[in-house]
Length: 327
Ligand code: ST9
Ligand code: ZN
Ligand code: ZN
Image (cartoon, rainbow, N blue to C red; front, side, top):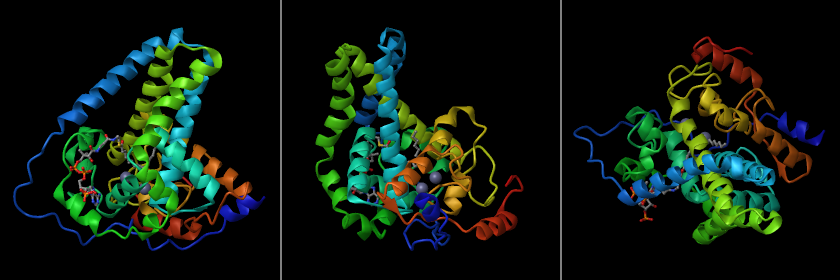
């Protein structure tokens, strides 16, 4: 099949600004004070209270509404994993215009900052992991890496180093720049109006239930699943590919099951080979995003999937792994 052929084409990593920079040193002296952004604290608290309330409403929802919530979850997750992450942050495959448009709308449904900002922060995260220049530096603890970083002003090094990143590929992608320009409007439409109005319009669900389940609860779940990769996957688990870095393979951490299902739980592999479109060496196993990209390749909507060569992975496992690799 065409898609398998493309997926098996092993390629060299693209020279992107997402490679760990060992030369960076944190500045000496006291750390800058932490400035809390109270607006974000209030909004995030309200979102999570609304999502909790949504859980209690589940028994009163139509089954179609619950199915719709799952569909919105999957679409928003793909906007993050296949879109902002594997396509735009790492350029691990190429996507046609229709696919990029779909992924941009799906990304707005996930409401995690626009693609440009997400990818810039993510490249700086890979390049300066676990340092002051990492936006969600896991060295500052679970809470900071998970949500705390969105509740305080950024460390100046994140901005300083981020401004030096090579981002011309993002700037020259019209889909990325148009999504950035109309970001607020696209979020109102995709994250709030569409998830809320479809169940009400098509099968008569109450607006109340539609607001709390497919909208707020689904949004909060996708956010937390994503944040777990920054927190849990940087703290707990094995390091079969590189024991010298913090990101882990946390397949046994139960609460990251969603990330594993999406194919983003293989985080030690991903930080070692960030250009690999599959973020894992195990193909479709626990990797819905890879299934999706392969399907897109089969439909000729995606191409040029990059993979780490098997022998390179194997020698890396032997050279720097922690011995837990089970090929
Ligand atoms: C969200 C993002 O949730 C989640 C990202 C997660 C990433 C996970 C990755 C893991 C791998 C993928 C796994 C996927 C798994 C999915 C599974 C799904 C099932 N470089 O930002 P400001 C500039 S968002 C260069 O205001 P402050 C900036 O351009 C949630 N420059 O900083 C600006 O300059 P200018 C919803 C940078 O004031 C200036 O600095 N959104 C960089 O410190 C100020 O920028 C929110 O909650 C950079 N890296 O505020 C909103 N960064 O003025 C959150 C900044 O010239 N954001 N600059 O334009 C905010 O409110 C603020 O950003 C802040 C910091 C309060 C956090
Ligand atoms: Zn990444
Ligand atoms: Zn990471």
